Length: 108
View 1: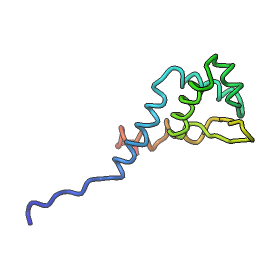
View 2 (view 1 turned 90 degrees about the horizontal axis):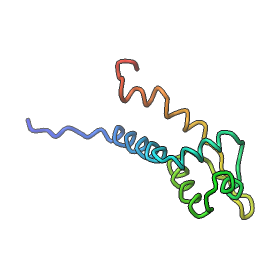
View 3 (view 1 turned 45 degrees about the vertical axis):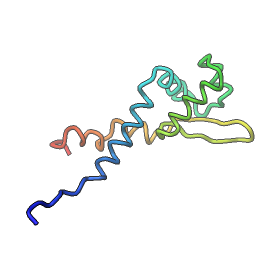
View 4 (view 1 turned 90 degrees about the vertical axis):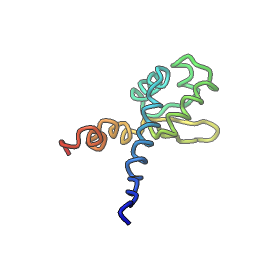
């Protein structure tokens, strides 16, 4: 009974996975450019965003899907068009006390 196996802290693993997806999504200049454009507008149609960033809709959709899966943008469908906007709450979390606590526990 002296050889007890410590339980793994799955909540920490889940937190790491969540932030890994977010930072992977941010680790691309095109996606950073998309986020920058979305920050300047309330909600933008894919067709308008495609013109602003000078990227074909198929390639843009690929990047938007990564940002959407990471929770950094929100999508609203109106008819056949998709409109995207920044998920301000998630963007704010990237610089949140929660993330800081992972790397500076003495400050929490």
